[in-house]
Image (tube, rainbow, N blue to C red):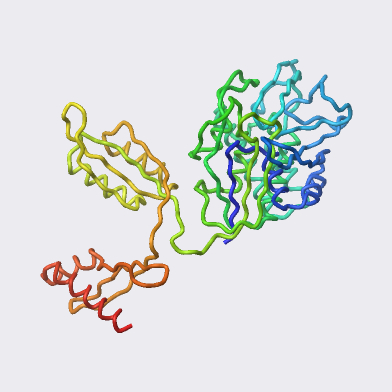
Length: 455
């Protein structure tokens, strides 16, 4: 299986993702032709840059000055170094929405200034003019000569953005009009991301926990904490953390790309790496390379490869044993791999029960919510660790009372490491035939051992 793994130790933005794609081998002319097909008055530039002493690829979206500047508001008196082009060193990804009934006849001037690790600093003085609607953006994607799979992915990304804005502003998604999210560079970033992802032909997209940065961002809605509301809404239950200088590191466009790719958040699996790419953010941040790393390769088929396991724990001292047993059954039914209970001595001499739940990392949110809903706990902690296990299989033996499954664990060489009769099978037969459980278990074990010896 072909795997693409994103390491977001410095976050993710649209331009970083495109840079990582090109650095990993996606042909830059493919992305250039994609931008031309969109027909939005833009082009791409690619260059090598240094970030923290490491080389990465930087992708810029260039719009012609005489083409209507398509941020949320066309920019007047925009100061930049190049008199004939406007170079974005990032995906301009703070979106702000207005309902369709908003009156834009009046003059509305404000400053929009923000800084994050994947951007340069922009200070805009602009006045309101008509904004892009979600349907207008989707029409651009629909009419472009692109593959159906690319159109589907890009459309989903903008639908995610629209739904996030609608939720934040408590309005129907049909009434959302985009500001920066409707900008040419963001359309280019998302569509090119879909094209590049298709070219890589990855069967699964995986991702590390996300460094979202810290501090605040100033925008039309005022000063807001990082991550911005739209980013937070898009990330959902993705694992996030903060590290490095106080900057915004995950942009809404970057978050939308992750949703578009349906990434799974997990540790790096066993992988035979075929390509590596580093996508650069707009600035060289001190102490932490401002890069997104992309690994592409084939998942290793070796046995006993480590995999991720989530461990949830809480201590309860005010519930009955019956309730704890009931909740344990619910947890197993909801997808927990195992649940166990340990008596503990708490402060002030109270006796409590430590409830530990083992599960796949994808089940953390579901099982966490179940614990809060069904028990009296008001807090719990969880962590993700690596686990390794032997290959397992089931074989059936026929006892004189009926069939019993045997769970078999094998060493990589194929030799049996352990074999045990399934408890539920033995219990059912013991109940049906009024035979001691230990008798059925022992006969099933002997029959399996004899069959293995013959084999």
